Length: 79
Image (cartoon, rainbow, N blue to C red):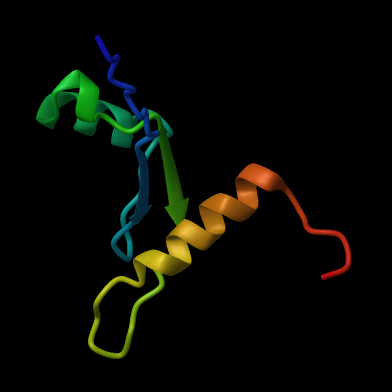
């Protein structure tokens, strides 16, 4: 019998606070806990000043993925 490999992925949430709002470090985590099943909750929540967006307002997910990758591997020497 062949075994199935399970690919695990880390859920990371990027958030931007509304102008004039404030949040404690636990607020986003508590909010996610109220709304999401445990396996869907982000393991990390990163607050950004602004989310990268196109002129249409669509979030540029590839920029978030690039930033996450850069954080995971650290600075690249020679860049």
